Image (cartoon, rainbow, N blue to C red; front, side):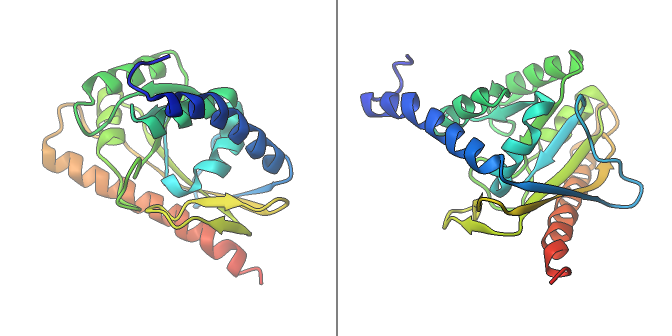
Amino acid sequence: MNDRFTPGQRLALFAIPKLTAIVLAAIGVTLRFETIAEPGTVPATPPARGIFCFWHRCTLPAGWYFRKFRCSILISQSFDGELIARTLALLGYGSVRGSSSRGGAAALMALRDVLARNQPVVFTADGPRGPIYETKIGPVKLAEMTGEVIGSFYLHPQHAWTIRSWDRFLIPKPFSRVVVSWSRPVAPPLPDADPEALESRREELNAALERARLAAERYFAQKR
């Protein structure tokens, strides 16, 4: 066990991921998923490859829905990140530890290796601490390195508990319907793109993620 964690944290790391995975599975099997997509967009299905992004607040429904994709996800090296990594491992996910924004070259290289094995990688685009709905540059840099397009999606439960956290974290209520909303993929930047070109593509990705979210939030409202 890693010495950087306190005894209390080590106990939490032993128990919480197992309990979380059990609770998520118990809720997950009751959820009913419905898929929507922008015109011209083909939603990904397993097995899939490429880069995918979503907003942090829908981590729980996304974690259950995408478990069959066998994704690898970039997760911070913090204690909270360790909890998430261990929980997702129980659901079949791989993880790359590090940051895409602070000294993250090694993490992006590791994700490039995952893509080279024809396996998908996923970013919580505004994680791990926000601000909410503001994507980091990491997915864009990885797309530049690999030439992979970036897929954007959002999952919105019809009925959910909302946690009072920076991301307004969603916990789907049992037996809820959940819409999986896809927006058009974002093309990778050209190799060796300058900072302005990278920022322009980051803004394009941010807009795609927001279109997916807003379409999902409208979906159930329109059905009332």
